Length: 313
Image 1 (cartoon, rainbow, N blue to C red):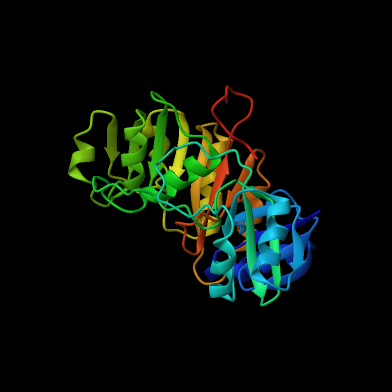
Image 2: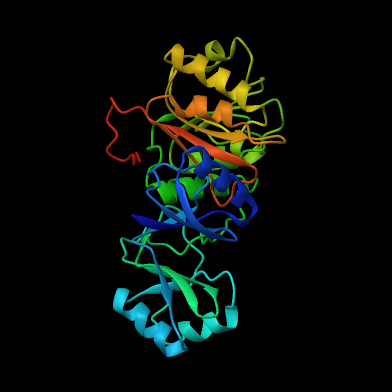
């Protein structure tokens, strides 16, 4: 099956390398938009994808509009060239424009199609975006209460993937200061153990659901200081991927955490070797969020426990 894949414009080269490594047939590429065939379900650097893709040739604006209407009723414009011509096509269609989202709102079921002009008389289109959201449109109505903008990564992850910790669960957050992720987790009603030698936001440390351990995340005695196993281990640590891999491996081997959500930060070239080792852990996957920089978010969800609220690709 032919598909359209969208990468973040800054990281199109990473998606191209991933597709090459997985021997995916790339039929064509225009900027950060890829036309592929038989791509695997799990792709780290793919921001959005559309099924049953086709290349349509047209002579006039009306021709393009009529061709798209035959394939679907609701569209979004993702053109990479001939933008004025693309706007004229959109005027004759029912078009969904990107908007600011609310955290944790349900993702629409669709159907939603997308088209992109690639030349004056050529467009690529898909009648089935997955998810049914305009690509690269995970912008939120932001909060002034959060102590840092890091919270947007969790908002995006939980909204896109449809899971989040439940009230009363215990979350360990490594590298927590000043508290962006802790703010999200505590707001969900979780018990949060925040670990960082840096200063935490005072309002968070005063929250009865938050316990701050002023320690190094790699300290040998951290599990003892935490006081037992936790439901979730979160990490937005600035560290090398191989060090994160060692940390996660240790916590998993000791059975100290059930679920993991960790930012894998790349310094210099993308460390695909460490990322591949993380992805070999059962129940895990990774994705590049719109609010990630040169990093990806790795998720590992334990499946032999009650996971009714968890969405596992």
